[in-house]
Length: 363
Image (cartoon, rainbow, N blue to C red; front, side, top):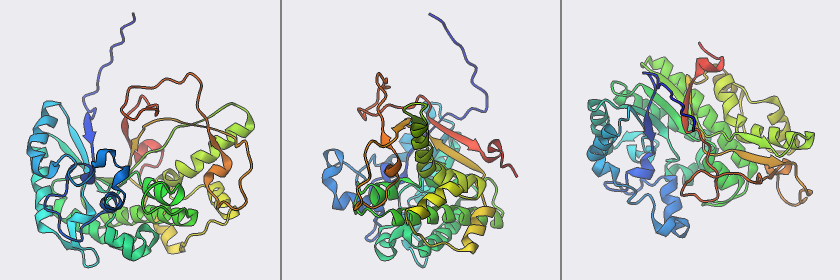
């Protein structure tokens, strides 16, 4: 047996990550403070394992002091979580802060820092306020982008002495892909144009918040956390290589390119136009996106994705979906790392953070 020894660098980050809605529970939550996951849970509880969901979660909002001690015992140096937008405010249009909830985060950050753990904070980990989804269609509306920036201003103003690592979104492609592209989650509506509008507005929201963060002169960095899927073709045949390239365009470069380079790939835009996928843009928005790229990226790597060229024609009455260009492919003999989500091979890497300047876009 060969033994391999590696030296862990002194500046290596050993951390953990969760979200507000996955951990806090509803203790202290006020009427009207539902997030999208809360509404999904209320409308569709049967799809949650044994009905368990965000109502109780891990009751972190009441148990964070003991959980922070567990983090310290585990040797964690960083903890990444989110602020629940739907609970941080009581009035989303007038941006009125819920002082009780905001004070909980003051206590949490104080506890983390007192135990040598650096907070890394995300402004939205699926916690779009249900009110904004129902009134404006969520991220389909530019009004929600503007309200998100105002929410971010309140968060930065209160917590900038305690937090210097900020992220706008965790996995911004996920909700609209599940809801509007694949129609697998509440409220179940297949509409590729709506999917694209949500993508566009989340990129615009990130650039707008980055712009405001820098204008206000706060210390630290601001970025976004993505979940790209390393994509492999079934074979080296041109048709399979093409399938993998297009999958990468739609699901990985949809956010990677504009966040890092300030523009979407021309080929992606051409494909969307070819299939009559429409969304609202403006030159002013595109300038903001172009000029305000992120300082760093968080990369959540879960599993690889393997595709092949499609084996059958697309039904003429089925609206466009990126699967027009690919089919999933299961590699014979593939190995699975042990994980509770049976049937899903895990990527041997975990969560990574990449500084913007490591991507050739340093300031």
